[in-house]
Amino acid sequence: MSDSNTPSLPRAAQPELDVAPAVDILQQALQWQVIFWSGEATDRDRTRWQSWLAADPAHARAWAQVERTDEQLQTLASPVAEVLRSADARRCKARRTVLGMAGLLAGAGIAGYGLPQTVPWQMMMADYHTGYGERRNVELADGTQVTLGSATAINVCYSAQTRQLLLRTGEIFIVTAPDSADRPFLVQTARGSIQALGTRFNIRESDTQIQVAVQDGAVAIRPATVNPDDVVRLDAGQQTCFDHTGVEAPEALQISATVWTRGLLVAERMRLEDFLVELGRYRSGVLRCDPAVRDLIVSGVYSLDDTDQSLRLLTQALPVQVQTVTRWWITIGPHPLK
Image 1: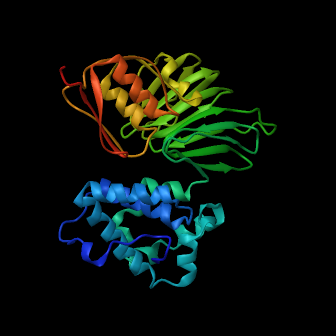
Image 2 (image 1 turned 180 degrees about the horizontal axis):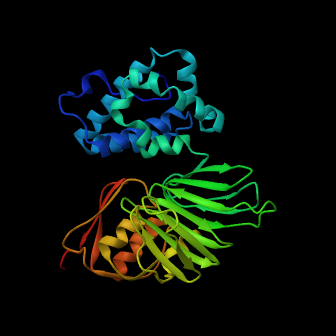
Image 3 (image 1 turned 135 degrees about the vertical axis):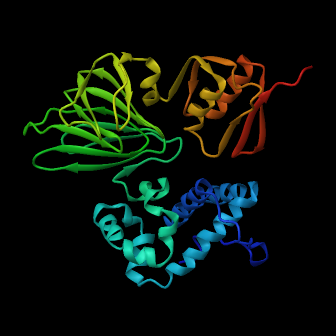
């Protein structure tokens, strides 16, 4: 499948593959491959890819592994390759075709990647998705408004009986619309479901749990592995977190839970390390925090749309400096003593 859209390592630079790439690095390589497969990669994307490749020898090993499978895919029937590579693969019909070919992909060696579980794959297969640092507003068929946060992917599954969203990854803010057929509105996640009871609410997925924050109305939360009748109601002005086994006690809604929809990050006595994790969700590359400054306290309102500006403001508020290795690898460390 290699062509002019997908860059290749020079033969002399091909790394040894005796050390398997770590899963997270392999996922990064797959994300780059998705960008190049789309046929929409820019010169800036290629420069970023080169910087990522040069940042760590493990990146080159992961890319070589992706290249090797890229070559194996050339042995597949051409319709399979075309479906994978076409921008139309993002559409529902093509996505079903791709998923139906899972056996062929496994035969090509891709199954070892756990590709369907990777964020890039989920992004490419979703009905709607956003990249890092991007927000997107979507109006669904019934008039419901959904705002997708950074690196978010959702599927829409409306039927005659229900209105349902599947949150594959990321964060969404929903304003539900009245439904003439009185169909319930559900959001499915990996850890359970949230039913809207005429409301405006936010849902955010993390590695271990789901955060729900309600601005208006109410929602009903059902963790995945409990009795279906065990429902926890969350009212306006409340937020909570849940996993597949249960729901935490509700607490007062924090303004920081929803202001991301306006491109803002509100820090209220937040540890610097935690602040940089939040800011890092809205920029590509690595944003590290030096352990020497991770417990400094950050307060204030910062931009998610211009994270470089937010980092500059940070250096004015705290005794820290921005240490830049590349545009895509930044460390916030202690300011040197004068």
